[in-house]
Length: 288
Image (cartoon, rainbow, N blue to C red; front, side, top):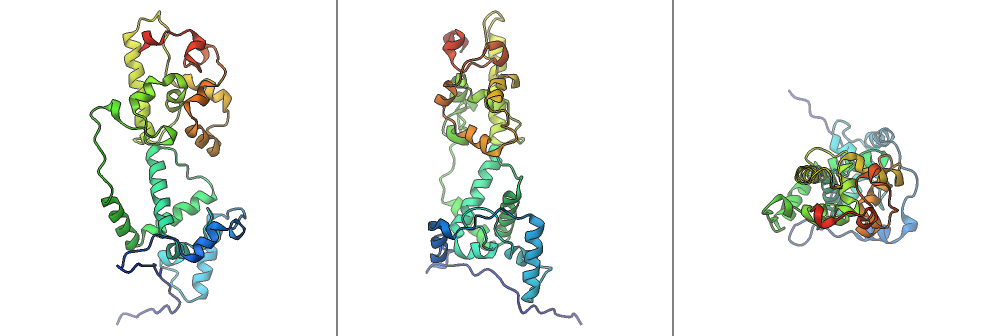
């Protein structure tokens, strides 16, 4: 006869639902108080994932929960990021499902754009929370419903019409980025190491293909704005720790073309991509 194991302290998420039975996406009164009052928010340094895990297992064990149930243990993980830092994963699902959907969508967008970096205790906590939240069928069903309510994306007639879909240039087309390459953004993209098949990676390949076509169409005697990785040497000299500093990388993605144009010009031989078209004496009409 199979022995039944009883865990009197097992706890599950109590989702907030509206009159029609759907999950409520607005924050609870308790969540609103925390969001609107910085004094109630935990400002302590984030803890290591292993410490968070051990503390969660201790809580589950003390209340008589099931340590073999990964979902139950994750529910006691303490958030190490954002305004709700210090609250448990289970608490967040019970108090602000809308914020949960925002986090899922935001990380998906950054991963597709190739700009998401999972390093750090806060990011480890975020990824663990997303794993926990998506282990609930209620969240998966809500994601499918929200996705079904969005209009289908229009298929571009050509590569030129593809949208960038990340950073402050998200609404620009690939062709627009190529045509305005003198502002330095195209060179920045080409110089990045991208996640394969991400949005940034696809844009990078498009720009390199356009550069190859330009190189083959213009005689060698005519100066050409190169989009090779060496073209980012000017940007690298201005932001020497770009690759190591996530905040600077995000700042770079948010820079407007005017900010690029305000950078001091450097010799064409060292960058291949001018800070200002007129600073090099390029004939732009001859180069398109």
